[in-house]
Amino acid sequence: MSAIKSIINRSRSHRVVQYSSAPDLSLFGVGCGAETTSCWANLPQELLREVLIRIEESESSWPPRKNVVACAGVCRSWRRITKELVKVPELSGKLTFPISVKQPGPRDFLLQCFIKRCRSAQTYRLYLGLNNALTEDGKFLLAARKFRRPTCTDYIISLVTDDMSKGSGAYVGKLRSNFLRTKFTVFDGQPPHAGAKMTKSRSSRLVNLKQVSPRVPTGNYPVASISYELNVLGSRGPRRMHCIMDAIPAAAIEPGGIAPTQTEFSHHSVDFLPSLPFFRSKSNRVESFRSGSLSSQREGALVLKNKAPRWHEQLQCWCLNFHGRVTVASVKNFQLVVSPENGPAGPEHENIILQFGKVGKDLFTMDYRYPISAFQAFALCLSSFDTKIACE
Image 1: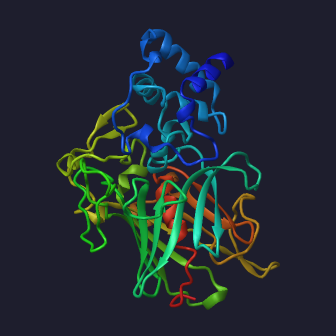
Image 2 (image 1 turned 90 degrees about the vertical axis):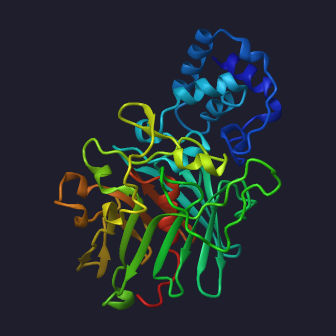
Image 3 (image 1 turned 120 degrees about the vertical axis):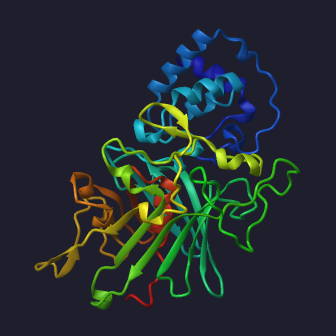
């Protein structure tokens, strides 16, 4: 098996995906162009599939999992089979390709990540944790940069750290606040589901400006709304957080429920976007999100709220049980659960969907699970960094 991996890496030495570098976006549908035929494409399909199955099963975690990504970059046939074998995070609990950050997390456990903040550059980087220890070792996933405007604040979210512009092919989405920084909207760079409507904005520009065709407008598809309510206890009390996940139906948390899952970064013509396919996890089929999109049925959207902390008499502070994942007290710390607004409370309402907390001066943990994605979780956590003047 090791000999096969070394041959694979040598055959594509000019395109090896390094563990610590930004993802090769051309491998996953972002700006894909013509591709020369590789000699490896002539391998018998049965043999090739068996080899790729063994590699996918043996490389279950990062950094070794970079070999699975490398296989997808050899040629088209390798890429097709590799993408068929790699399951979405909801089923496998693994983040493999860049598109994984746009797909719902695992159903059965929290996927452990952490965020590094750089105060001087106003940047934030999201990493996948490689172990249970609160260390700074991780697999890079997303980056964000804060931009202050006269009437709002924007956080541009990207797949790479060196290009935070909306005209970049690595643009994923953005978070925008109101003037008081008490209300936020999360925008996706592409339709979260079929029938999603794009919000008109002066800042909407064309993705990949150097390309002549195909061209699509930079997405402003609202996928979540966040509000922080007035805290009657002032700075001593916890924040009150309320999130409406416009792109996720409330029924997604019920047994057998389904959350929209994007399968690739779409850079096709505008006419193609409404029929963007999605992966139906239960039946392993590609289908469109059914009629009655949440863009026009906001009342059917999933609602999350922060879990109420308890006052600890001995410590004289508000406390939440983060199970060892948070070590520093901070007003930014929170846990999100399903709100009773979604219907009668059931066992699924007790599950923590997202938890975020401080472990160092500029280091924070972020753990999330189904039905939200890493991108959505990252955007929700970014909203916690801003000072809420009207609420504290």
